[in-house]
Image 1 (cartoon, rainbow, N blue to C red):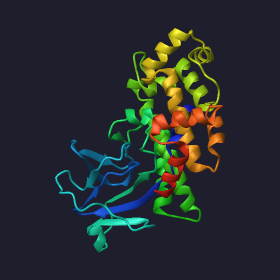
Image 2: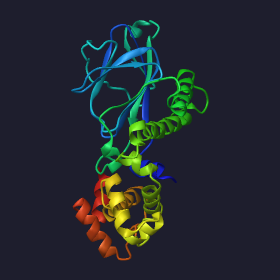
Image 3: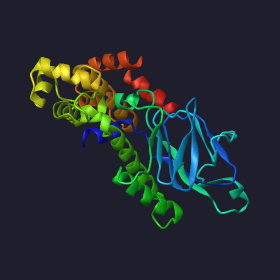
Image 4: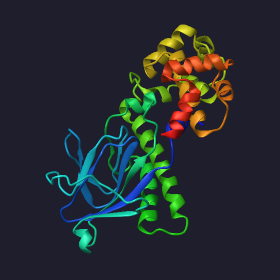
Length: 309
Protein backbone atom coordinates (compact mmCIF):
# COMPACT_ATOMS: atom_id res chain seq x y z
CA UNK A 1 0.00 0.00 0.00
CA UNK A 2 1.02 3.62 -0.43
CA UNK A 3 1.97 5.61 2.66
CA UNK A 4 -1.34 7.44 3.09
CA UNK A 5 -3.26 4.16 2.94
CA UNK A 6 -0.86 2.58 5.44
CA UNK A 7 -1.17 5.50 7.86
CA UNK A 8 -4.98 5.32 7.79
CA UNK A 9 -4.89 1.54 8.18
CA UNK A 10 -2.68 1.68 11.26
CA UNK A 11 -4.79 4.43 12.86
CA UNK A 12 -8.24 2.99 12.13
CA UNK A 13 -9.85 0.94 14.87
CA UNK A 14 -13.19 0.01 13.30
CA UNK A 15 -15.82 0.87 10.71
CA UNK A 16 -17.26 4.41 10.65
CA UNK A 17 -20.57 5.13 12.36
CA UNK A 18 -23.05 7.38 10.58
CA UNK A 19 -26.63 8.57 10.52
CA UNK A 20 -28.78 10.68 8.23
CA UNK A 21 -29.78 14.11 9.53
CA UNK A 22 -32.83 15.77 8.03
CA UNK A 23 -34.01 19.14 9.28
CA UNK A 24 -36.32 22.03 8.47
CA UNK A 25 -37.35 25.33 10.02
CA UNK A 26 -35.43 26.46 13.07
CA UNK A 27 -33.12 23.73 14.32
CA UNK A 28 -29.71 23.01 15.82
CA UNK A 29 -27.61 20.09 17.00
CA UNK A 30 -24.71 20.19 19.44
CA UNK A 31 -22.04 17.55 18.79
CA UNK A 32 -19.91 16.75 21.87
CA UNK A 33 -16.22 15.87 21.50
CA UNK A 34 -15.50 12.31 20.35
CA UNK A 35 -12.41 10.11 20.58
CA UNK A 36 -12.28 9.55 16.85
CA UNK A 37 -12.72 11.95 13.93
CA UNK A 38 -16.16 13.47 13.33
CA UNK A 39 -17.49 14.28 9.86
CA UNK A 40 -20.45 15.86 8.04
CA UNK A 41 -21.46 15.63 4.40
CA UNK A 42 -24.20 18.01 3.27
CA UNK A 43 -26.36 16.26 0.67
CA UNK A 44 -29.19 18.78 0.32
CA UNK A 45 -29.80 22.41 1.31
CA UNK A 46 -27.54 24.63 3.40
CA UNK A 47 -26.75 25.16 7.07
CA UNK A 48 -24.13 26.62 9.41
CA UNK A 49 -21.24 24.88 11.09
CA UNK A 50 -20.50 26.34 14.53
CA UNK A 51 -16.98 25.31 15.63
CA UNK A 52 -16.11 25.57 19.30
CA UNK A 53 -14.36 28.91 19.72
CA UNK A 54 -14.28 29.61 15.98
CA UNK A 55 -16.19 31.67 13.46
CA UNK A 56 -19.36 30.15 11.94
CA UNK A 57 -18.87 28.51 8.52
CA UNK A 58 -21.61 28.44 5.88
CA UNK A 59 -22.14 24.96 4.43
CA UNK A 60 -23.86 24.14 1.13
CA UNK A 61 -24.88 20.94 -0.67
CA UNK A 62 -21.78 18.91 -1.53
CA UNK A 63 -19.64 20.41 1.22
CA UNK A 64 -17.59 18.02 3.35
CA UNK A 65 -16.31 18.75 6.86
CA UNK A 66 -13.89 16.69 8.92
CA UNK A 67 -12.99 17.22 12.59
CA UNK A 68 -9.75 15.19 12.71
CA UNK A 69 -9.32 15.62 16.47
CA UNK A 70 -12.96 15.03 17.35
CA UNK A 71 -13.49 18.53 18.76
CA UNK A 72 -17.00 19.56 19.79
CA UNK A 73 -19.08 21.75 17.48
CA UNK A 74 -22.61 22.43 16.32
CA UNK A 75 -24.82 22.52 13.22
CA UNK A 76 -27.76 24.90 12.87
CA UNK A 77 -30.10 26.51 10.37
CA UNK A 78 -28.58 29.95 11.05
CA UNK A 79 -25.36 31.15 12.63
CA UNK A 80 -27.28 32.89 15.44
CA UNK A 81 -29.50 29.93 16.38
CA UNK A 82 -28.66 28.78 19.95
CA UNK A 83 -27.34 25.25 20.08
CA UNK A 84 -29.72 22.66 21.49
CA UNK A 85 -28.91 19.75 23.77
CA UNK A 86 -26.14 17.37 22.66
CA UNK A 87 -26.97 15.22 19.66
CA UNK A 88 -27.91 11.73 20.78
CA UNK A 89 -28.86 8.92 18.46
CA UNK A 90 -30.31 5.57 19.35
CA UNK A 91 -28.10 2.59 18.66
CA UNK A 92 -28.58 1.55 15.05
CA UNK A 93 -30.61 4.66 14.18
CA UNK A 94 -30.35 5.54 10.49
CA UNK A 95 -32.16 8.89 10.51
CA UNK A 96 -32.39 11.77 12.99
CA UNK A 97 -35.01 14.47 12.48
CA UNK A 98 -34.66 18.04 13.71
CA UNK A 99 -36.80 21.18 13.65
CA UNK A 100 -40.20 21.35 12.02
CA UNK A 101 -39.35 18.30 9.92
CA UNK A 102 -40.39 16.40 13.02
CA UNK A 103 -44.00 17.46 12.35
CA UNK A 104 -43.97 16.06 8.82
CA UNK A 105 -42.57 18.98 6.80
CA UNK A 106 -40.31 18.22 3.89
CA UNK A 107 -36.65 18.42 5.01
CA UNK A 108 -34.77 21.51 3.86
CA UNK A 109 -31.40 20.08 4.86
CA UNK A 110 -30.16 16.51 4.54
CA UNK A 111 -26.71 15.50 5.74
CA UNK A 112 -24.75 12.40 6.65
CA UNK A 113 -23.07 12.81 10.03
CA UNK A 114 -20.89 10.45 11.99
CA UNK A 115 -17.54 9.38 13.31
CA UNK A 116 -14.46 7.63 12.01
CA UNK A 117 -12.95 5.34 14.62
CA UNK A 118 -9.26 6.16 14.92
CA UNK A 119 -6.79 5.57 17.72
CA UNK A 120 -6.47 8.86 19.62
CA UNK A 121 -4.10 7.48 22.27
CA UNK A 122 -1.16 7.78 19.89
CA UNK A 123 -2.16 9.87 16.85
CA UNK A 124 0.01 9.63 13.79
CA UNK A 125 2.08 12.80 13.18
CA UNK A 126 0.12 13.35 9.98
CA UNK A 127 -3.12 13.51 11.98
CA UNK A 128 -1.54 15.73 14.62
CA UNK A 129 -0.65 18.17 11.84
CA UNK A 130 -4.25 18.58 10.67
CA UNK A 131 -6.26 21.63 11.82
CA UNK A 132 -9.27 21.30 14.11
CA UNK A 133 -11.62 21.74 11.13
CA UNK A 134 -11.04 20.62 7.54
CA UNK A 135 -13.72 22.19 5.31
CA UNK A 136 -13.78 21.14 1.65
CA UNK A 137 -16.44 23.23 -0.13
CA UNK A 138 -18.20 21.99 -3.24
CA UNK A 139 -16.55 24.14 -5.90
CA UNK A 140 -16.74 23.40 -9.61
CA UNK A 141 -13.65 21.56 -10.81
CA UNK A 142 -12.13 20.99 -7.37
CA UNK A 143 -11.81 17.55 -5.78
CA UNK A 144 -13.79 15.74 -8.53
CA UNK A 145 -13.16 12.28 -7.06
CA UNK A 146 -14.27 13.45 -3.60
CA UNK A 147 -17.52 14.83 -4.95
CA UNK A 148 -18.18 11.68 -6.98
CA UNK A 149 -17.97 9.77 -3.70
CA UNK A 150 -20.37 12.29 -2.12
CA UNK A 151 -22.86 11.73 -4.97
CA UNK A 152 -22.67 7.96 -4.57
CA UNK A 153 -23.11 8.29 -0.82
CA UNK A 154 -26.14 10.54 -1.33
CA UNK A 155 -27.82 7.98 -3.57
CA UNK A 156 -27.32 5.17 -1.07
CA UNK A 157 -28.55 7.28 1.85
CA UNK A 158 -31.59 8.70 0.04
CA UNK A 159 -32.73 5.43 -1.51
CA UNK A 160 -31.29 2.41 0.32
CA UNK A 161 -31.35 -0.85 -1.59
CA UNK A 162 -30.08 -4.36 -0.84
CA UNK A 163 -26.40 -4.06 0.07
CA UNK A 164 -26.59 -0.47 1.33
CA UNK A 165 -25.60 -1.48 4.87
CA UNK A 166 -22.26 -2.63 3.47
CA UNK A 167 -21.91 0.02 0.76
CA UNK A 168 -22.40 3.10 2.99
CA UNK A 169 -19.53 2.29 5.42
CA UNK A 170 -17.32 1.44 2.43
CA UNK A 171 -18.13 4.78 0.79
CA UNK A 172 -17.43 6.57 4.06
CA UNK A 173 -14.03 4.88 4.16
CA UNK A 174 -13.38 6.02 0.59
CA UNK A 175 -14.52 9.52 1.55
CA UNK A 176 -12.07 9.61 4.47
CA UNK A 177 -9.14 8.88 2.16
CA UNK A 178 -10.32 11.47 -0.36
CA UNK A 179 -10.65 14.12 2.36
CA UNK A 180 -7.11 13.48 3.56
CA UNK A 181 -5.78 13.38 0.00
CA UNK A 182 -7.49 16.67 -0.85
CA UNK A 183 -6.06 18.36 2.23
CA UNK A 184 -2.54 16.99 1.78
CA UNK A 185 -2.36 17.87 -1.92
CA UNK A 186 -3.71 21.44 -1.67
CA UNK A 187 -1.63 24.12 -3.33
CA UNK A 188 0.29 25.32 -0.26
CA UNK A 189 1.47 21.74 0.37
CA UNK A 190 3.01 21.32 -3.08
CA UNK A 191 5.23 24.39 -3.33
CA UNK A 192 9.02 23.79 -3.29
CA UNK A 193 9.34 25.45 0.13
CA UNK A 194 6.49 23.46 1.68
CA UNK A 195 6.97 21.45 4.88
CA UNK A 196 4.83 18.80 6.54
CA UNK A 197 3.23 15.54 5.52
CA UNK A 198 1.74 16.76 2.26
CA UNK A 199 5.21 17.75 1.07
CA UNK A 200 6.79 14.59 2.55
CA UNK A 201 4.44 12.22 0.72
CA UNK A 202 4.99 14.05 -2.57
CA UNK A 203 8.78 14.25 -2.21
CA UNK A 204 10.47 11.46 -4.19
CA UNK A 205 13.27 10.99 -1.66
CA UNK A 206 11.34 11.19 1.62
CA UNK A 207 8.32 9.45 0.12
CA UNK A 208 10.48 6.48 -0.87
CA UNK A 209 11.94 6.26 2.65
CA UNK A 210 8.49 6.44 4.27
CA UNK A 211 7.22 3.72 1.95
CA UNK A 212 10.19 1.53 2.89
CA UNK A 213 9.58 2.01 6.64
CA UNK A 214 5.84 1.42 6.33
CA UNK A 215 6.18 -1.63 4.12
CA UNK A 216 9.01 -3.38 5.98
CA UNK A 217 9.34 -2.16 9.58
CA UNK A 218 10.99 -5.47 10.44
CA UNK A 219 14.12 -4.66 8.42
CA UNK A 220 17.22 -3.50 10.29
CA UNK A 221 17.02 0.00 8.89
CA UNK A 222 19.76 2.55 9.51
CA UNK A 223 19.94 6.16 8.38
CA UNK A 224 22.48 5.02 5.79
CA UNK A 225 20.28 2.25 4.38
CA UNK A 226 17.19 4.48 4.30
CA UNK A 227 19.24 7.15 2.54
CA UNK A 228 20.42 4.56 0.03
CA UNK A 229 16.80 3.47 -0.54
CA UNK A 230 16.02 7.10 -1.33
CA UNK A 231 19.22 7.73 -3.30
CA UNK A 232 20.90 10.25 -0.97
CA UNK A 233 23.88 10.32 1.32
CA UNK A 234 23.31 9.78 5.05
CA UNK A 235 23.64 13.44 6.08
CA UNK A 236 21.65 14.89 3.17
CA UNK A 237 18.87 12.33 3.64
CA UNK A 238 18.63 12.89 7.41
CA UNK A 239 18.32 16.66 6.93
CA UNK A 240 15.68 16.36 4.24
CA UNK A 241 13.63 13.76 6.11
CA UNK A 242 13.69 15.70 9.39
CA UNK A 243 12.82 18.99 7.69
CA UNK A 244 9.74 17.60 5.94
CA UNK A 245 8.48 15.02 8.45
CA UNK A 246 9.39 16.88 11.64
CA UNK A 247 11.08 13.80 13.13
CA UNK A 248 14.48 12.22 12.58
CA UNK A 249 14.39 9.04 10.43
CA UNK A 250 15.12 6.57 13.23
CA UNK A 251 12.73 8.35 15.62
CA UNK A 252 9.95 7.92 13.06
CA UNK A 253 10.99 4.30 12.46
CA UNK A 254 10.62 3.58 16.19
CA UNK A 255 7.27 5.39 16.27
CA UNK A 256 5.98 3.35 13.34
CA UNK A 257 7.23 0.07 14.81
CA UNK A 258 5.55 0.72 18.16
CA UNK A 259 2.28 1.82 16.57
CA UNK A 260 2.26 -1.20 14.28
CA UNK A 261 2.95 -3.38 17.30
CA UNK A 262 -0.08 -1.99 19.14
CA UNK A 263 -2.33 -2.84 16.20
CA UNK A 264 -0.95 -6.40 16.14
CA UNK A 265 -1.41 -6.74 19.89
CA UNK A 266 -5.01 -5.51 19.75
CA UNK A 267 -6.19 -6.98 16.45
CA UNK A 268 -4.48 -10.40 16.42
CA UNK A 269 -3.72 -13.28 18.76
CA UNK A 270 -0.03 -13.33 17.86
CA UNK A 271 2.28 -14.04 20.81
CA UNK A 272 4.36 -11.09 21.99
CA UNK A 273 7.50 -12.70 20.56
CA UNK A 274 5.91 -12.93 17.10
CA UNK A 275 4.79 -9.31 17.31
CA UNK A 276 8.35 -8.33 18.24
CA UNK A 277 9.73 -10.06 15.14
CA UNK A 278 7.08 -8.46 12.89
CA UNK A 279 8.31 -4.99 13.89
CA UNK A 280 12.05 -5.61 13.73
CA UNK A 281 13.10 -6.92 17.15
CA UNK A 282 14.98 -10.20 17.31
CA UNK A 283 14.72 -10.20 21.11
CA UNK A 284 11.37 -10.23 22.91
CA UNK A 285 13.09 -8.65 25.91
CA UNK A 286 14.40 -5.73 23.82
CA UNK A 287 10.95 -5.23 22.29
CA UNK A 288 9.25 -5.28 25.70
CA UNK A 289 11.72 -2.70 27.03
CA UNK A 290 11.21 -0.42 24.02
CA UNK A 291 7.43 -0.81 24.23
CA UNK A 292 7.41 0.03 27.92
CA UNK A 293 9.42 3.19 27.28
CA UNK A 294 6.75 4.32 24.83
CA UNK A 295 3.57 3.21 26.63
CA UNK A 296 4.58 2.96 30.29
CA UNK A 297 3.70 -0.74 30.54
CA UNK A 298 4.87 -3.98 28.92
CA UNK A 299 3.09 -5.27 25.79
CA UNK A 300 1.30 -8.18 27.49
CA UNK A 301 -0.21 -5.88 30.12
CA UNK A 302 -1.09 -3.29 27.49
CA UNK A 303 -2.97 -5.93 25.50
CA UNK A 304 -4.93 -7.21 28.50
CA UNK A 305 -5.83 -3.73 29.74
CA UNK A 306 -7.05 -2.57 26.34
CA UNK A 307 -9.05 -5.78 25.90
CA UNK A 308 -10.76 -5.21 29.24
CA UNK A 309 -11.54 -1.53 28.54
